[in-house]
Amino acid sequence: MPPLVLFGLAAVLLWSLVSRRFERWGVAGPAMLLVLGAATTVWDLTSYAGALEAPITEKIVEIILSLLLFADATEVRGGIFGGEGRVTARLVLIALPLSLILTAAASALLIPESFVVIGVIACVVMPTDFAPAAQLLRTRLLPERIRSILNVESGYNDGLISPIFGMALPIAVVLAPLLQQAAATGSDTVTVDEENVGHNAEKMADAFLNAVPATLWAIVIGVVLGGLVGLVLRAARDRGIASEGGARYAMLLLPLVAYGIATIPAIEANGFVAAFVAGLMYRVTRTRGMEVRVIPHEELLLVEEVGSLTADFVWFMLGGAALLAFTTSFDWRVIVLALLALTLLRLGPVYFSLLRSSVGRGDRVRIGLLGPRGTATIVFGLLAYNALPDDEGNIVLLVMVVTVVGSIVLHGVAAPLVLRRLASRGDATTPTGDEPTVQQR
Image (cartoon, rainbow, N blue to C red; front, side):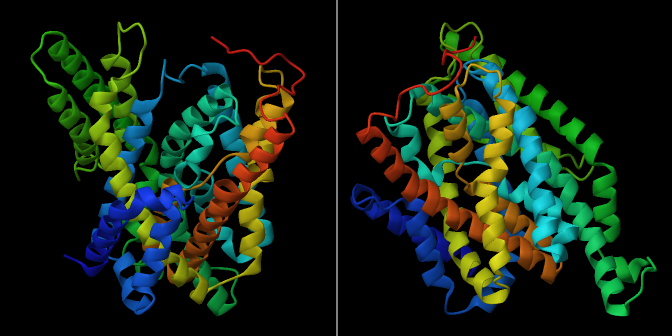
């Protein structure tokens, strides 16, 4: 077993033994595992960097993300977009693309040398995840409707970003060596050949050119597999053929099978998209005919717990990645970019997308500012670091680390304090919009 995996498992085991006491003290799991990861790898960062670039690490994080995307898709309540369909659709179909475009533009302006990876950076820093700020979804300081909207949006945006990331990364991998050659020669023209582009250029170029059919095939695989398993399991549970344990195993294995089928060399589809769509279709067909269209919690339990366990391992990896990023290429401009990504670059598009909706002004601001970054950002960042040349990979890794650490501080520490202060003034749950705050159906 690779040392990185062994140390990560040991760290997660240690945290599992003491988590309850530390959480009572206000110490979140992601923060503690980040510290454990840094403490474990500080002695030999060179070896850790090599482990991050190993093919087995890439596969591990890919499988973890596929499982988490599936879990996110199955936990949404209600229809395709949950109980807040119109609001969620605005957030993921309008606000999210605008946020990606603005982040890419900000990256190009603030860090011109990152131009080749601006699309990758945008995909890395924009997915939201409430792992570093889980208390925000439990606190009564936020209206229940806002918590529901944030939870559903978080379950969707990383799944929708996955195919964009799958297209942006091959572009960066192909272009990076060419721009490096141009910079080294001082020439405005570049001769493209096998040596310049690199050993994986043809493979990456093919991946980019086939990005659309790869995504379409992934959707087909997810729809067929998730829909079929959901129908079969619903019938089996209604007839007493399948037990609760069997349903739990089926839910855990389904995203792995979807990812595995999608990544067969003969198909080469997007495994992330396949797992995510499988989760959506499984939830739709499994809950069809139910009065409350929610998968029973006893069936969700196993995939939730395994998802939490694998996410803990990702947070451990972030600790070493943080040390590696800060000691390799720290740049104050990255801090500015991360702060913008966590605030204005999300708030502006969110506010704009919800204009003339049932969400009031104050709640638009809350939704825009409360977008923690977590596991999906880490995984996308690690995959980019693994695939890109050193300079570009280091830039993406640093942006990822600063964004996630900043999110822990802003959303995990500062946001609850601000909400408590607002609550003490009687403002926390008071609608402040120019339109009535009512649930859309």
